[in-house]
Image (cartoon, rainbow, N blue to C red; front, side, top):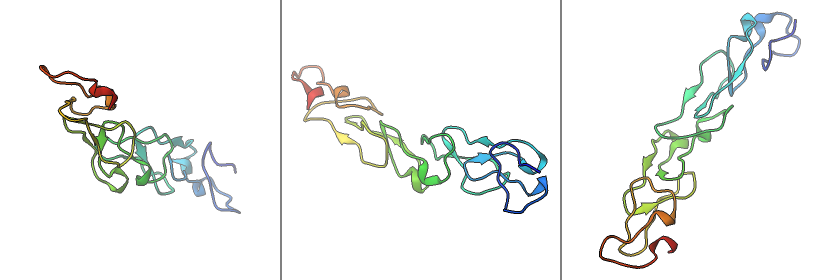
Length: 136
């Protein structure tokens, strides 16, 4: 017998019940149901019918992710999501323009930014000060 879409079975298997969904996919392949790819911001690191796990708070991952380490903090957030930690927004006065576990960068001297800022251009001079803080 042939396994449903995206399912796998051990070599020489002859029954549908031997079909399982691989890591990164979920479903009940042993009952003939096709395996669906884990959605964005989730992962599944084992074969079988288990549900996909949600990445830590505020973290993102690509569809079909196969491990917790695929979860990462998006721009504007910092933390170690790939090890199970939550992503927290960059503090006011800082920014982060790339995804991952890197720390947020501090705005230039006296400049301010909103919490969770994603670019240097988000850093601006407060009222009463002048300059081009958003270009470094």
